[in-house]
Length: 297
Ligand code: HMG
Ligand code: MG
Image (cartoon, rainbow, N blue to C red; front, side):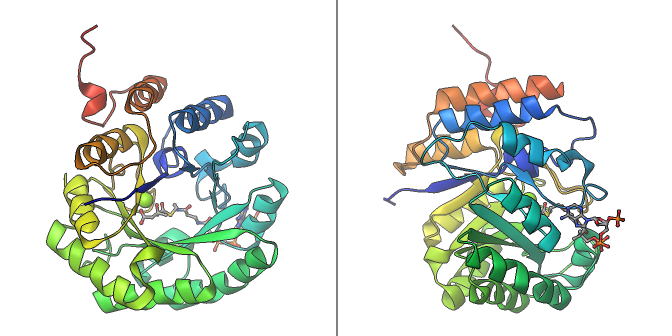
C-alpha cells in the first residue's frame, strides 16, 4: 500500500457528545488546538444540533468563537437542519457535515425522522450551504447494523450514500455506529458503495464497540479507501445508539498507518500526549492502546 491517508478527527464532536458531565468550552478548545498542533488537518469541532437532544454540544458556538484556527486546518461541524446551518454560518465555519442513517428505526431515535424524510430535510440544507460556498460532508450511520432493527441491507446503504453524493456532498462517511461490523462485511460494503459513488468520495467511520475497528479500517485501506475517521483516546459514542463506544483511536490508527508506510501528517508523540491529557480531564484512562503504555523515561 502506498499514498497518503487523510484522518478526520472526530473526538471533539463524536467523542465528547455523549459525555455525561459538562466539559468547559475552554477544554474543548484546548483539545482542538492540541490536535491541530499534532498535525491533524480535519478536526470536527462541534455540533449545531438541538441542545435539547445533545446538551453536551450546546456550547459549540462558544467553542468555534474561541478557537484559534490554523491555516490549512479544516474545522467542520455537524448540522441537522436549517436552524443548525444558520448557527454554523454565524460561527463562520467553512465546512459542515450532514447526517442520516440507512435505518429508519435508528433515524427516528436520532433525528426524529425516517430515512426518506431526512433526505428531504437535508436537501435544502445542503443546497443552501453549497450556495454559501461551504463544503459539505455527509455521514450515513448504521451501515453494518442497527441497534433497533438489526440487519441493514447493503443496497439501502448504497442508495442513501448515492443520494447524499447526488445532493452535492463532496464525501460520504460510512458509519458503523454500533461497531458490529467485521472486516469481510466492511470490505464488501465499501466495494458496493464505491461502485456507486467512487472510492475517492468515500470515508470510513468505525466504532470499536466489539474490538473490530482497526481490523475493519485495515480491510478498507486494502480495498482502497484513503479517508478514515478516528477519535483521539478512542473517545465517544452516539447518545441514540445503545452500547456504542468510541471510534477507532486516532493514536492506534496513526501507529498502524506509520507501520504501513501510509503518510497521515500526524506526529504520534504529541497525539498520544493529547489523548492522555483529555482522558485525565474526563477522569478516566485513555481507550487507545498507545495511551495505556506506561512512560519509561
Ligand atoms: P425535533 O425535536 O424533531 O425538531 O428534532 P424540532 O424542529 O421540533 O425542534 C425541537 C426543539 O429544538 C425546538 O426548540 C427547536 O428550536 C430546537 P423549542 O421550540 O422546543 O424551544 N432546535 C434547535 N436548536 C438549536 N439548533 C438546532 C436546532 N434544531 C432544532 N439545529 C433534530 C430534530 C434533528 C433537531 C433533533 O433530533 C437533533 O438535534 N438530533 C441530533 C441527534 C444527534 O446529534 N445525534 C448524534 C450525532 S449523529 C452520530 O453521532 C453518528 C455519526 O457519528 C456517524 C456514526 O457513528 O454512524 C455522525
Ligand atoms: Mg460516530
